[in-house]
Length: 275
Image 1 (cartoon, one colour):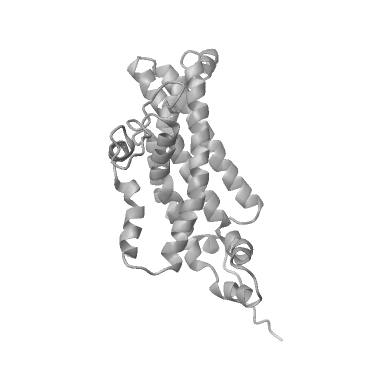
Image 2: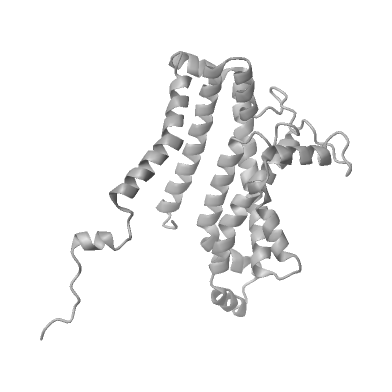
């Protein structure tokens, strides 16, 4: 009896079924990526090693530089963790609840994407500065830096979690509820595993954005050396004092930290089979 199996197309045909852009598109994409990303990164890396590895090490281990890097990394990690909780809650409300002004709230979530970050710093300074109308004075404190960074990074988590939450199987939740599972058990056993990759991705993006943020903290943070000065402010100060090699060294360190964190998140999600 003749086989009814449909023969597979040739390997070359199968490769073309994906709708690739072809060699021209690949070349344009590679050229643009090189001009916009790779060449500037190479220039910064070269500048950081201009005086040799010893000077590079001295630049990033100077007391003020080391404090700024540690402060920036710690606060960025804390902000990412805060936004994982609050961003998930906001995404849950936007997806699962209906209320007046929902579309307005959705638009406000994206405001930090469109708003110049220096404007955010002015707004936060007006609200939480020395003349705070609400009686909360955070100027030149670490909580001020946390608030500023949380403001500009919140959308990364919300927009990462929201579409995944919309696709979660509601029937599985209803089945768990019918079997007597509590709300927390249902969330932990059914919803959270589905959100896990999005949460990690959103947290990684929020961390990477926070670690290099400048505009939103430049006014409200105060920029006090070894107190509230983040790495981006330290870099700007090095440029102003004509120390470009030192600024480049700290910049490369920030890039390395961001890359390691994002790569680790990607590797971990792949290892767990959720990406």
